[in-house]
Length: 358
Image (cartoon, rainbow, N blue to C red; front, side, top):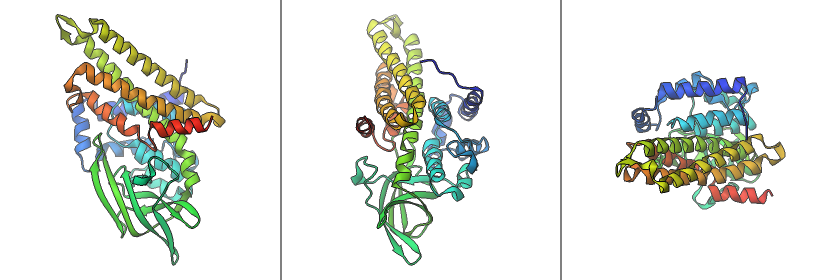
């Protein structure tokens, strides 16, 4: 499939690549330092992303954002994935930006776009098992306000100061803005597999802020979120493949490069095919007609996530045990793929949605 970015899209991608080069420069030391910072990423890098306008990528131009569509999301997130950035652009900019923009949250968008407020979606619950329509957290009226009770898991970034909380009330599931430091909000932070900071959030009589949407608002943005996550996974997948290919060309064993052995050539060929298939699946979703977009995005997420895990496993096996250490890129990349594969539902959930839309 032949596909080229237009001039504006190419400039956007180039801006993202410049950010990656300036912030990380292919050096794992910078990424380790960013991950070890209290929020799990570098505040200076986040400010730089805000200065370039990239935090408003998914926000419409009407609301002060870049108004990025499918192609812009793909180009940006793929470049961020290939750069192995620590900053949670998907979790703290794209997902909240889409929700606030699509719902009634326009008043909160300036803080997201300029980076002064850190947002996170608090939706997942233990009993839901990737069913986005299953919400146990409750919302009840109290005078002229709403009180929330329940527990949310895997909220990323875990130290966000503004939460978008889903809760079920008499009129169905709503999305509410809640300040992370509000009375009745308790956070327990922990590290995910990729080193990002997440939180389990317990709400005990917490007072909600504005209601910015409902379940339909969330479900409407899921296809774009899946597209963005898939693009970042593809960038990581390409990084895993290219790094491993360079390694087997230079690593000497029995007096010759590993890449001279036929079994290694076969494994790398299989990995290359998966990368190209994944890219085609993503492009199919990007270019799909609107009526078929949700199904195409679900199919792409399911396939690309599993394909990337396969390429990641091949990369680790080619490097040996050291492949999982923090000293090599592939360990970091594979762990990030594992986290992204679970974004708003795992591969099986995406495949179920794909089949249901047939």
